[in-house]
Image (cartoon, rainbow, N blue to C red):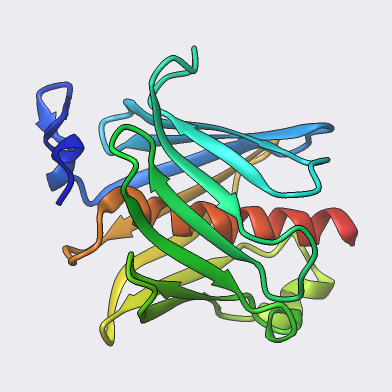
Length: 199
């Protein structure tokens, strides 16, 4: 596990965290800003996701001033049906894994295939619940699950809020870097936001 995970926020080791909240504004024009908070409300991740780039790429920072980069998430294709995103630890240059979005199957239910740093498929992330109904009624709240080695390692649930999008993420211990799990969750929520924009 990366030495970055022994960092502390408010005296609590990030490696032991199992509950997070992701927030973003309901409307945005040129970019979406995601903030990831720990259970006690402290900022852990800050992401500006650009909307107009040909190749999707964004940096995950530890602060709003964007002076402490943590991860680079970059699409390996410019145009494709199944996009693959590589997640890299910026500090060490270590690849944490890749996430492949299944384009055609996501018409009915968003699905992502998860690969480890060696390229081996180890699990998937998938939209749960009434996914087809949500295509017609976007105001319905969403749920996603992340599964690795046959076990659910994270559950993402949207909380109903006015003027903001808020999601809780409950993470179970696994062999994955918790930052990679959060990156998978963020990619799922970004795909959802893009679909809502098209509706």
